[in-house]
Amino acid sequence: MTDLPGGGLARGLLITLRTMGRKTGTQQYPDVQPELPPRSRGVIGLLEENCTVCMLCARECPDWCIYIDSHKETQAPAVEGGRERQRNVLDRFAIDFSLCMYCGICVDVCPFDALFWAPEFEYSEYDIREMTHEKDRLAEWTRTTPAPPAHDPNGAAD
Amino acid sequence: MSDAVMIGIKVVCVLAAFLTLPLLVGQLEHKAMAHMQGRLGPMYAGGFHGWAQLMADGVKFLQKEAVVPAAADARVFRLAPAVALIPYLLVLVVIPLGPGTVAEALDAGLFFALAVTGVGVVGMLMAAWASANKYSLLGGLRGAAQLLAYELPFVLAAASVAMAAGTLSLVGIVEAWNPWWLLWQAPAMVIFFVAGMAEIRRPPFDMPLADSELVFGYLTEYGGLRFAFMLLAEYVGIVVVCALTTVLFLGGWRGPFLSDELGPLWTILKIFALSFVVIWARVAYPRLREDQLQRLAWQGLVPIALGQLVLTGAVVAVTS
Image (cartoon, rainbow over all chains, first blue to last red; front, top):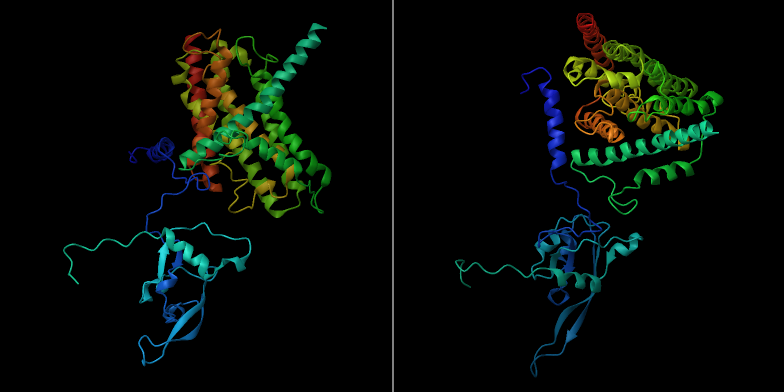
């Protein structure tokens, strides 16, 4: 078709006409919610009960956007005459999403499954300070985290 | 008394066409261009698929400050949008919509239309020179060169039809029109349409504007309502060129059936079909380079137009 003189011109017209007949790619986002894959990486949530304040996430974070404060508490011995034990108590866990680059390293390094990806993404703010999510807000994100995938029945048994 | 009333009605009708048709073409451009590029185009203004987008734009232009650059030739700068716009309004007066539906049927209507459309370019040159801006001036020079190059094939193609019809009256041309002219005058039609697009500086012939190299050419210093008028001139220009092509080459109000009853409808339909082609060409083709633009005119359109003129003359001489 392009061999004919003016064939390229005709083809240009044909392509635009064909595109006009096709469905547009525009997403009308605020009016229509996007259909995201269930494991979209929108925000990071914290399951506080699992956190042992090991600080691995804060140390691995490339842009140091995780803030952790904790203190130690002494526990009474579990049995009579036993030894007193100390455990870490989490005071503050915050992620500054204005710094976060969504690399997910914190989720990967957490050895106790306390950090999860959640698909929420609508948490923009008018004030940059509001982008630092404290642990109560981080806990809310875990609600929309999909359940972990089922074990492969052919996989190794525990 | 009744003469005055008739003139009043005619003026109102022409003004209404002048104000609504370009907006319809503009909206068509918004939507057609968007869908050709896989987009939706304006969706919010007015509620239903952004039908009021251009009115919203107009209100926005109204609110803006009318800036005149300090170094500009202020009076010429202010006058230029009017000079660019009013010729097209005057052309609309002589364009016949249907049998007997024409504001003013001039005997030399074609001559009048061609002469007056040429004046629109003077508005562009005024804008270019008075802006005191190097980009504007470059745009204006390109516009002048483009006018020189494309006015010739434009007029030659129109002359071919005038020869075939044996009259300069636009109404007379439509009445003399015959369906086989579609074949006989086809090269002239293409030349007239392409040269007309170049004349109103539509992409792909928008070298005088060329936003990627000349900022915005002769419109660089314009803003607010004056810019809106310049923009309106472009869209009225589309309507005028499409209307002239319709009247000269596509038989105006003559349709496949009910030509006498539905005449104006056929004309409007043809005008919008051609406007769609103008928009289509804008989406499909990249802007021509300045030398390509000149080559197309001098090496392509002018020789073909002359050939068409010879052909028309020969056929007319043989048949009459």
